[in-house]
Length: 140
Image (cartoon, rainbow, N blue to C red):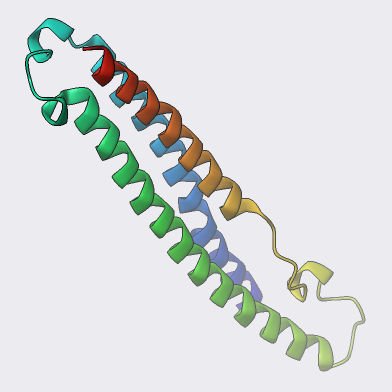
């Protein structure tokens, strides 16, 4: 029962990462689409720093940085829960009794690349969307 609770806690720490990634990619695309839909005639007389496309590009980069920070922080909490699970599983395995009752993955410290992959996806989506917005800002 304790290991099940520990696994549930770990899952609750890993799932938001996927939600943040999907939300970021979708919102960056929506912002780029919204900027592309603006009529350039209204904004071409504004100074470059006040054009909506440039402001959107800066906003995308800032939001991507904040999402990266959140993913890294959540992964840190996940690692703490994983270490606690490993310690509990190791103690249970040392008690003896039925050999192999604790699955190998519960005592493994092997780390996947999931959170780094999410960060790369967010960074890539932010780069594409912000470069698109910057190209619109230059063209106006």
